[in-house]
Amino acid sequence: MTELSFSCTGVRADRYAAGPTLLFRLRIVATGGEPVHAIALRCQLRIEPRRRAYSAAEGEHLEVLFGERARWGSTLNPLQFAQVSLLVPAFTGEIEVDLVVPCSYDLDVAAGRYFHALTEGEVPVLLLFSGTAFTGPGGFRVEPVPWDREALCRLPIRVWREMIEQHFPGCGWLRLPRDTMDALLDYRTQHGLPSWEATMRALLGATGPTPGPPAGPTARAAAGVGAAGRLLSERTPR
Image 1 (cartoon, rainbow, N blue to C red):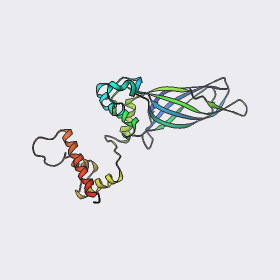
Image 2 (tube, rainbow, N blue to C red):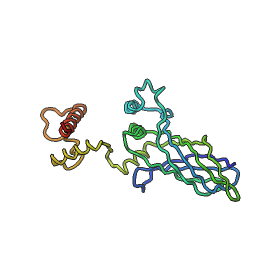
Image 3 (cartoon, helix red, strand yellow):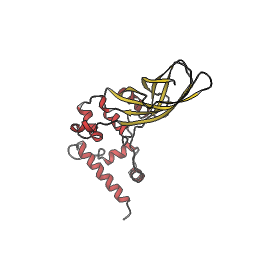
Image 4 (cartoon, rainbow, N blue to C red):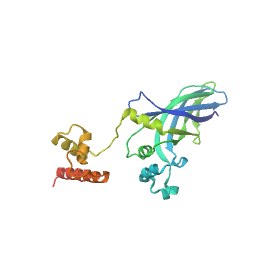
């Protein structure tokens, strides 16, 4: 049986992908000297939050995922990042290949919220492998990739931010229910607002003449929530 081992030598953003995509560089070593005709590889990527430290500001942003910092001893559990497949071509001895991992900037997804909360350093990502290997000097043998094969990769936050900035420069992404989106579109049309940014600023009370000192972020947010609520209530059949 061919012994396979895996390691991750680096990770980079795919500059030519249509959407946010990371490329994990894998080194696969097959001992025994027999050729490997192909590997149908499956990989689960899991964030290991216990393997790094967090600043006070990062900790505040992560409370939505893990609760108060005093409880992190029991709540700082792994987060599912992605699950992808890869067909490894023929090789003998060792080979390096790119594992293509499409990414989401959806802040409703735990992994997206985790990345968004971090400001510096690296994210420990554990790669767990399985699949089927086709090996043998003449013809081929079908062998499973053992379930205990894994590799640890440290993904720099800088790489993640550069990837997101490439596809969403200076912007964020927000997912809304269709009825809310329809209400916002009606509001934008009725008030002749030129962009979605202008629409949201109008709802937050950040545009137009405002008597007295400007309201703080909390007050503006509350005003925006109230305006959005009134907007939706006007569209709701009575």
